[in-house]
Length: 209
Ligand SMILES: Nc1ncnc2c1ncn2[C@@H]1O[C@H](COP(=O)(O)OP(=O)(O)OP(=O)(O)O)[C@@H](O)[C@H]1O
Image 1 (cartoon, rainbow, N blue to C red):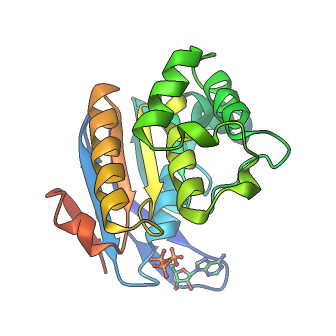
Image 2 (cartoon, rainbow, N blue to C red):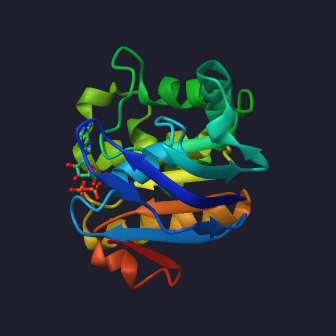
């Protein structure tokens, strides 16, 4: 589903970051860890096509995404890649339900209301759907952004510290739900994290140095 080869990137005025080759199949989970500054966020942005690598290749669902022009990359991302950011970036004027529906429409077309409700219930946000994003706590926003990424039914799911603001109970629930949904939707799930609770849950790991 996704693999990389000889990937390297240099930020302006920064040193060259070189990344180990990695692969993650449909329905599997890969954890990407590493010390602060090792390049986890940079790698996530490369895999999402938000940054273009200086060298190397990234294949997502059969497409070498580093070859796509910006507009084609945006369209590809909308259809195939779901991203769960540390900060949720919702559209402030829309309710959570409207934000989720919009993500589904931009991905694989509108989803049924019942599907949205079911996902919201699993993530414990069903009573919050009518609220505007700013009215949600950090942890609630994080769960809502997971729902938004899943609504897109992506083939590749990229998560940046998805459990950082969650207590132990919600951390386990969210990690389980993410892995379960990735398997159900046959998406490859890549999680960038410091969270040692996740390191115990997922065996497949890459450590950036
Ligand atoms: N926009 C930028 N311009 C220049 N250098 C940058 C930029 N973004 C990141 N870097 C540098 O690139 C390296 C990797 O940064 P990155 O944010 O990917 O690390 P990280 O592993 O995600 O760190 P953290 O765990 O602290 O979030 C760091 O040395 C950082 O200073």
